[in-house]
Image 1 (cartoon, helix red, strand yellow):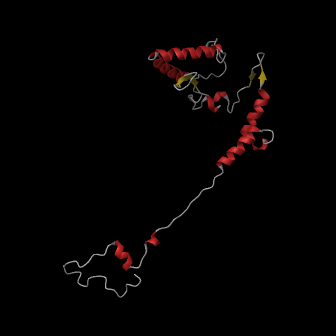
Image 2 (tube, rainbow, N blue to C red):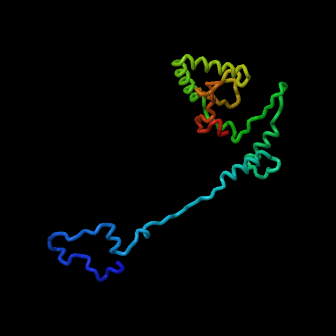
Image 3 (cartoon, rainbow, N blue to C red):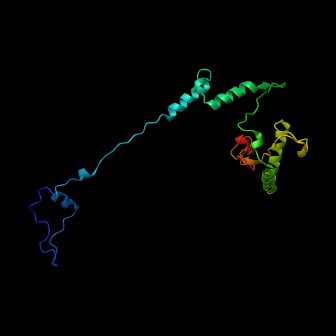
Length: 201
């Protein structure tokens, strides 16, 4: 300690039990040792600069004007854009149709019937316990059929030569919705026996 070299700080007879003369606490001890608490505090400021928001805004404008920023598209995005341009058609009712692109051959899908049946039986069990949900589900599916979004298979399974994928579906209930509280969602991520799903191809 600076300035305390000539001061006898310890009791020379510390090994002999005796009465304590004085106790120096933290306040006095700092003054004796000539130290300051200022040396023990340090303020450090850190900052991190990111350009995520800027990049997102730039990306938005690039997508908004594809012709001007065509080079900004990834190879996958360019492939999807070309597919859209090549396969988009318009039917007699005026609706536009586009073929679904495939990343893999459909033959890579495995068997899916047992998985879909298992999911369907579970759905039936759930609907049997809730009459209101069952009615809403049936109404949704009937409307889906009437709109032409799906159709009844008219052939026996053995007559279908193409690869088949059985698509499971389930109910999603949105209590806070002001229009449709129930929505039927198809699970295209359900895996077949090969480990591939419809999303994979």
